[in-house]
Amino acid sequence: MKKIIFKVRKSIIPSKSLESSKMQIANLAFKLVEEQLKKFPEVISLEFGGSFAKGTWLSKNADIDIFIKFKKITPEEKFVEISEKIGFASMKKHNPYVRYSEHPYVEAKIKNTRINVVPCYDVKLGDWKSSADRSPFHTRKMKQVLTPKMRAEVRLLKTFLKSSGIYGAEMAKQGFSGYVSEVLILNFGNFENVIKSIANIKENQVIGKTLKKFETPIVIVDPIDSNRNLAAAISIENIGKFILSCRAFQINPSLKFFKPKKSKISKNNTDNVLVVKFNFKIRSPDIIWGQIKRATNSLKTQLEMGGFKVLRSTSHTDEKKEAYLFFLLESPIIPKKYSKIGPEFFREKDCRSFISKNISKTELMWINDDRKIVSLKKRKNFEVVKFLSEILKNNLQTGMPKGLQGDFKKGFKVFLGTKNLTKSIKEVTRDLTSTDDTIFYFN
View 1 (tube, rainbow, N blue to C red):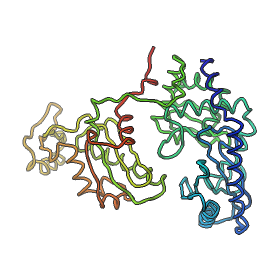
View 2 (view 1 turned 180 degrees about the vertical axis):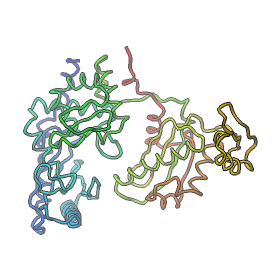
View 3 (view 1 turned 90 degrees about the vertical axis):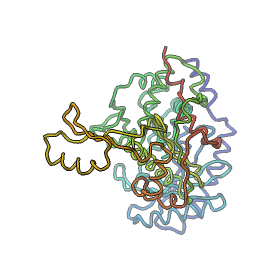
View 4 (view 1 turned 90 degrees about the horizontal axis):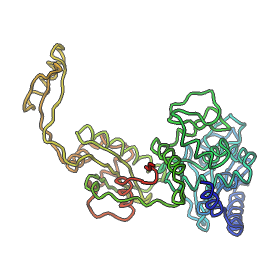
């Protein structure tokens, strides 16, 4: 393991020339934002934040975070309005657009480097008014406690997480943030210790110190706020992938754990993938991702209520126009008839109600060995494409979040994964129908 770690560590430290280039971009962005502050007395100061400020950024992912610090007395409406004005005015030559966390912030790109202009309040430790208020404290804490050696270890961990497809806190990913990576290195000392500790982690184990109880598979305590569980924002699947990746790397250390994965396509399952495609009116990426994730969960419930067993589900969007919802089914065709279980025959009132509701539509009714009345009924739709198309056409309010209903009314397509798909959609389908043999490894 040590040989692999040594080899990767050497390859992930940004070169001096790249550092110099990023610093020039950062200083330019900072100056552009700073020029706008004179117009707004509500703003106290600016400061760099995030991985760039802490020296833990990856060569290919060097975002520049600039925090606008507002007086605490600034009303929320002004806080949002002024921060957007500053962001758009300062980045007007760099195609700015709004992103969302708890509050909106402005994002742009300068020479392929993402610039985030983020508002926060100037508050004391623990006296939070917005979710971004912690970020400057995160930056100061990590700059204070992370040694140059530990910063290299953070970069190792980030590369490992990125290769596993679980790096990134955005709604689309629900993975491990850069700050979580730093917190893990801070707690365990180095990358190797993180691997060994996570490989043997126990359910509900707490990483850090807190008196509060949390209901997540693992708990990662924020060092500057012991009441905050950083693992709450990470999906259960991504926590599981991290644990299995650590176990697999410990058993079989290899450079493949630090390179992009290539999953094997399972052709046997593509005809069991149901795809819902629709176009949407442009909106913040964070909003559309949240909406399609909720839509996927809602339609999964509708499918299962209709008798279709959903094994896995996911969603995807190009963040510009198209969105897709995916469902891996046990089968796209189910039996034409199904049995509906009613009450025990001793429950007179319930029996009457069940019989009156079902007798006219039943093909057969009987009492089973559990003393319950059973009705054999015929399904209206036993093919999944027809079933879901009808729900989306006639019962949109039942199966779709309100924010997407207008988009669906303009049109949608429901089809199985055997249809011609674009390259990016094929990749999503591949991930849904394939096994990652790097983490599902046993020796």
